[in-house]
Length: 88
Image (tube, rainbow, N blue to C red; front, side, top):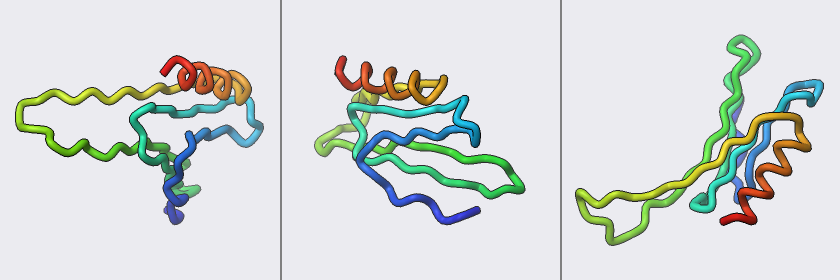
């Protein structure tokens, strides 16, 4: 694959070449977002959201991690991620 995009603080949105279909991620718990292109042979690109585990967590304690995934046209994905951000 190609080198990953540097981790970034803003949500990642990927779109088809003609920009008719897009997917994006948002998490209020995110510390960084990233993407990885596996190359033309595999025709696959992934996006991810990362969060740093909070200190002081003991074994057996449940953690909550919220993520939103939006799929649609670029304007629909942007609007959905903005809405998710405003609601959190």
